[in-house]
Image (tube, rainbow, N blue to C red; front, side, top):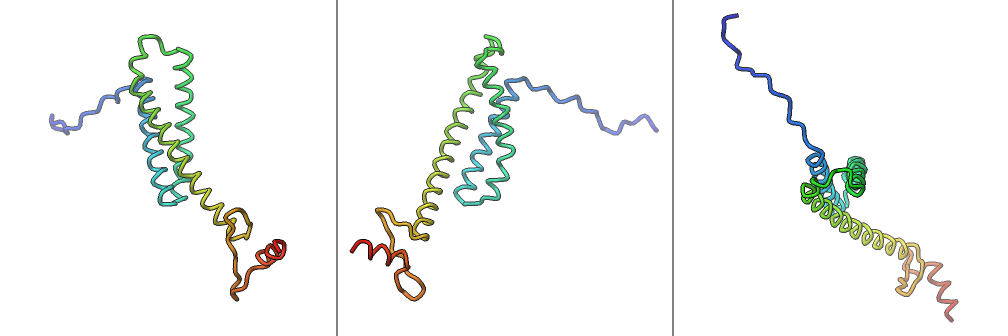
Length: 148
């Protein structure tokens, strides 16, 4: 070889993230997943929704351990100020999770109502069901006889 260098310089090892930074990164990723989960729920894309769940559960476990360490005070008194951003991210995750839970509950209520109407189960908002000949279904007729 001639004395020329190839221009390639070995990179130094990546900087090691502190526990606070790692926890913030996990909370940020969880928030991203919760937002993606919301979009999947709005589009009723269960494939995407289900694909998100394993990583979400893993992050929730990881962040649960972080929360436990914070509550136990094992991080030291001087570190509390560094956790303010982390705590705000966790609050946003909680709010997003509640939003998703509300959407899921509403969708389940809608599905149950539709199933109830299709099965002919009668409630205060009873819907009469007709067969393909335009006649009241058996359950609809039976209830009419019972009312008389």
